Image (cartoon, rainbow, N blue to C red; front, side):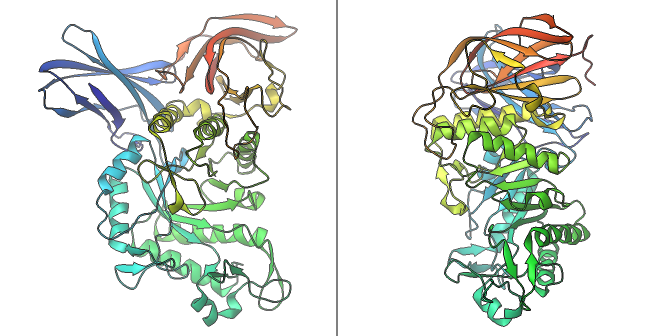
Length: 555
């Protein structure tokens, strides 16, 4: 009888009233009570109740409201029970929400590709995105041309012949805003149409032989994005015009990863590893001048040039993953390196996996989320990115859709352990986490239980990733079997600090709520150690070791 529960917005700002939508379907005439427990990590912080009376034909949406503390950023879990008149549970469900000052504090980035005139499922699309807590959207290939974003009239054909409508783009932006979702226009930093290049050949980039550089079969031409190039000023003017003429919330900058070495029209070498971060900073300056608070993202294709882009003024790190980064371990390494280089900015990975490879998707998401990052993969309803050309997305099965929904709820619920208030401590804990009878060697790529550790001021977050009995350590190759489920695991952690409580949670079970674990403490030399048993492990468990003594106070 409980169809669904989800927040009405992608995230909430400090002081804002949270509205939780509880959708019910009642097969008989009766009054039911709805009880929602709101938790921060392992502590209940609020209990919300209401009563609904439905008829046999009803499908009703009931709202629960709450004003959380004005503490941000913070993620919350919600566990809902529907009780009959005798107090017996008829149904249960869970969701999550978070309180952020800006969506880029905890980005959950998605995509759109359909801007056809008269698009009829805009509201349904935004509801689907909200259920998955998507708080930022990349409007992929929305523009008229790569060198002229805004069309001369509402209806237009894009460079690949798709008929699009600027009115549809505006409608999608407005609908996203009504749900608290930011909208960013896709742009390419050095791509121009052939006619534009022919008008401005000296604005282009050239190879070592002095020939202009095409993308594809002269589909586009590569222009010079260096700071003093006329192309750069043209591009910045385009960004300004887009933000003045639409309600977009910033700029998404794309590149193609090549060329890495090129020359201007005078034969001078262009240092693209520096020119691209310089363009990011110039875009930030242009964007915030038109729209204060605008977000700017740059696609670090193949993790290049990460050293420069991570230190730029962009709001977060966006990395498109390509070979040689084909291992599950590489997803972790890319995230923690970008966090370290950027001073802790969030990381979004674009790692394209066909949803038909559900095991790959599930393990990749577990690794990405456990490492403190997020994954751009969701957008159009029921779709999942499977290709760098976003319209070539795949469709999730019902089973995978259920799993992904749980994982996204879990990531929001425990974001203060998984990402926000913590730093990577995995190398520091190498050799300090043992699972009895199982390999946890950091050098081993798979056929092991992999500890990924995040450490904060008051807690250690230990994720156990199950890589046992896999075909391969690679996220790119189809896995024919999932990890072998383990039961009754004895875990021992050398913490280096006193532990007052241990609890665990998982997105792989029926409930994501925190569950306490009994633990024992011993001291080896001067180093405290704790031991505890975890009932089972499928793909991913999160174990939290709360540090220090006394009770935890939650404002």
